[in-house]
Length: 563
Image (cartoon, rainbow, N blue to C red):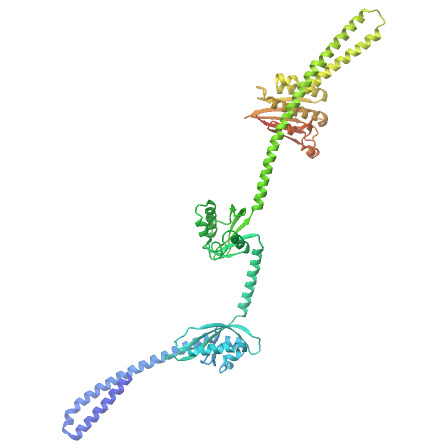
C-alpha cells in the first residue's frame, strides 16, 4: 500500500510537469486542462489519505506483532534458561553460542562463560575423535531438519570428575539447506546408571533366588505371554521335548499352549484356572496332574498366582510332587496291607474266640460227664458206707465222722466244679440267651462281691442274637463285672442292652472309684481277658469296644456290634 501511494504521487508529479509544459507551449490550453488536473489531483490526494490511514493501521499491527514476538521470545528464553535438562546452541563447528542454566550447572560454570568455548573442551580426550567425526557428518548433511542423534559421552566439569551424559544433537538448516547451528540436549545419566545397576543387581538377585528353587517358574503378562522363566523351567523343557524352548520359552503365549491341547481335560482345567487368575476373578489356582516322560512318570502341582502390579500378569509354577506321591502310594499300599492283616487278624481272633468257646464247652462237658459222674458215684458209695456203719454196733463214731467230712468235701467239690463249668460255658447262655445268662452270672457275682446289679434291655430279649455276638458280649460283660468286683469298690453296676437299626449296643457301668485311662495304656486302655482284650474280642466280630473312666467318676465299658 505504501508503494502504491508513492507511485500515485510520482504519476501526479509527472502529470503536473506535463501540464506545465503544455501551458508553456500553449497558454490557451491551460484553461481547458486545469479543471481536469484539479479533479485528478483531488482523487490522488484522497487515495493518498486512504493509504496513509492504512499504513497507520498496519504500523499498529506491526507493533502488536512485535510485542507478541517479544513475549514469545521471553517465554522461549525462560523455557530455554530454566529447562530441567541442559541445552546448548553451537555453530556447525561446535562453538557454543547459547547455554541455559542447567547446562552451566552440569559444567559448573556461568552461562556467559560457556559462550564462545568449543564444546569439545568438556569432552574426554579419548572421545574427541568420535565427537569430531560426528560433527563432520552433521556438516556434510544437506537434508533440512535432519533428525537428531543420541549417544553417550563423558563430560568433564571445570572442577569435578567426569560424569556420563546422554548427548542429543539436532541440526538446524536454513531455507537453502545450509547448516546454521546445532542444538544440543545434555542429560546427566549418573543417577539413571546407578538405578540401572541397582535394577540389574536386583534382577540378578531375584533370578538367583528363582534359580535356586527346585520349582519350574514362568512369569506371564496379562495376555498370557511368557516374559521370564527360571533355570528349572528351562531344564525341564529341554529334557522333555523342547530343547530350543520354542513352545515353552520366553515370548510364547502359554495360554495358546494349553488351548492346543484341546483333548486333554487337565490342560483345559489349567487353561481355565490361569485365565481366571489373569482376569482377576480368582485369587490363587492350584491343580495336581501327572506328567509322564520318556524315562519316568512325574507328578506336579501347578500354582497360578496373580502379580500385584497395575499391569497385571501371573506367576505360574510347577512343583514336583513325585516323591510325595510315591510316599502316598507307598502309604496307601502299606495301609492296604495293614487293613488286610487286620482283617486276617480279626478272622484269626474270631477263630480263636470260637476255639476258646469250643474248648470251654468241651471242658465243661468233660467235667460234667467224667468228673461230675464220678463225684456222684463217690457220693453214693460214701452214703451207702455211712448207712451200713449206722447198723453196726458202737465204736464206729470216728469212722462216721470221717465219712461225714468226706461227704462234705464231695459236696463242696461238686459245687466248685459246677461253678467252673458255669464259668467256662454257662448252660443258661446256650439254653436261654444273653440276657438270662447276664442276669444269672451277675446274680452269682454280686452276691459274693457285695454290689447290686441291674440288667436293662430294649428289644434284645425278644429274639436270640447270633452265637458269636452273644458269646462276645457275654465275655466282655463277664470281664467288666470281674474288674468291677476286684478293683472298682462299686455299690451298683448296671448293664444296658439295646438294639436299633441292626446295631447292638451294650454298656456296663459302675459307680466305683474309677481310674486314669493312662494307667492301662499298655493294653490300649483295655484290660486283658485271657489271651484277648475286650477290644480284640469286639473287633473279631466286626464291632468295637472302648472304656471311659476317671478318678471318682466310675467306669463305663461300651460295646457296639453291627449285625
